[in-house]
Figure 1 (cartoon, rainbow, N blue to C red):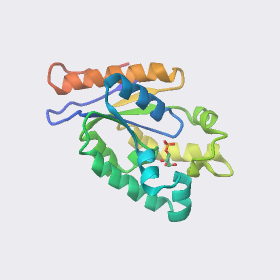
Figure 2 (cartoon, protein in one colour):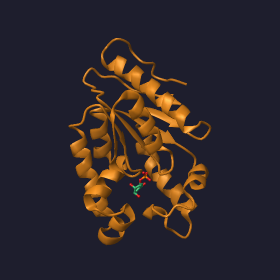
Figure 3 (cartoon, rainbow, N blue to C red):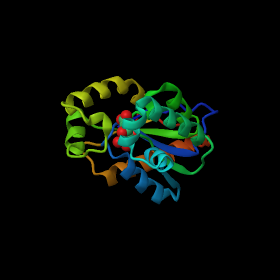
Length: 195
Ligand code: S3P
């Protein structure tokens, strides 16, 4: 695990946001963390699906990916007004720098990580992810992950999910959130690196 939050005095940690590639467990971990913290849980894909009254794959098909990204951008704007919320984002949402910067303005941003092979193992057989409806999904995962890695690496905390249960991952997320909240309140300074 890597922990590298730089706590400038201006940093506000009102929410906890989970980012990461499809299939890394963001929604499951987010729900567990929200239960524990007594926070509201919000999944950006669920909200977009509810508002559009359509599945994500349908939105991609009918309106195209740019329209979906615009819906995500609007969601990100609305999220700045949230408090005590655990937010699970779609995998591509933080790969736009302004989205990521906005999330960091109110949240501790935690990225869940897994290798392309592990991701493929977890998502194969699922059909609701339009970006992976490709002749060679593993190649697509590799390509997208490489393009998004520079954004995912900007998370405050990066947790490898491959060798842990999602319950263990959620415990680590909660621990990091508590440390970050205390640090933001000025009671302690977190280490620059947390093994
Ligand atoms: C996407 C990830 C999906 C969903 C959409 C696009 C992506 O969310 O937002 O299919 O670009 O990686 P999950 O990461 O929750 O699967």
